[in-house]
Length: 353
Ligand code: GLA
Image 1 (tube, rainbow, N blue to C red):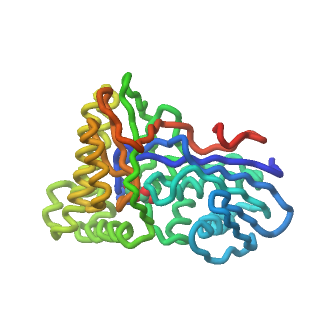
Image 2 (image 1 turned 120 degrees about the vertical axis):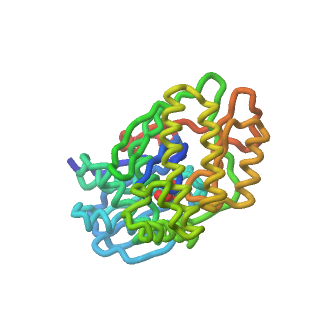
Image 3 (image 1 turned 90 degrees about the vertical axis):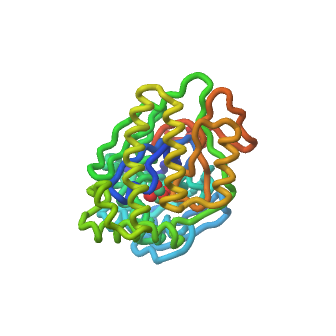
């Protein structure tokens, strides 16, 4: 059944652990957070899309049949419309209002939240309610690579689409098996984020360069992805590629160690794994910056059991796991695992997801 007016919400995510593993067919353990993107959509009966970005005070209008290339936030809207149509969905002309309480380029996946919220709203207007979510995540990640130029994996979109209250999700990017893992914090423990103040765009060369380095490593090792590589063969690689591959293999192991530590209720072990992940991202994968290091230090000095950069790197937020005795520095925000992307009830207040 199609609707005249719908609203959707898609959350950002924090990745507990498993960074830069998604495009290497590896493992990750993200959770959806309560902040995200809300899209209100109204069918117009016309042949155009009119999109208003309320948080920026900007708008865009383009023909539904043939969206042309654009830059910035407009690339996401046009890309989603074009890719959904290309996938065979019969979209209808609409007015879209986009609102977000996620900072951009801050490592909390504002782009995926935008793509997913737009997709759910446009599909609902077109009368498509049963969508296969892994396929939709893949379509949204195509928008990132083909329309925005960021050759990202599917971590952010899957986290936004499959997040659930109180759950992290273990994603296996080889099989796309998705397993909820209870994210239980004992009394007094907190997960928090602290902004490094530095911003990044995944379309910037450094992120894409890491991807290229991983495929070069695969070529040299004769494997399809680093998931098929074992520790002993890494010695064959040139030094830089060996460090990249070491990070990926180690990070996959840390994901399962974290799942085991969570199941055992051993939060100190989770903290140590977060620290090990950060050290590897800094030293092997080289995606940290002085501002991020200073932020990690602030959290550790405040008594965090573990702290690490989240997302693509080169700035953005740091995640900290605080034990009850820790005294969080100014500017920290609590994060908890919240509901995944969904349609909102008619006349729903965007502030009460
Ligand atoms: C960004 C990308 C994801 C993933 C992370 C790093 O968030 O969008 O696909 O690669 O970086 O884990």
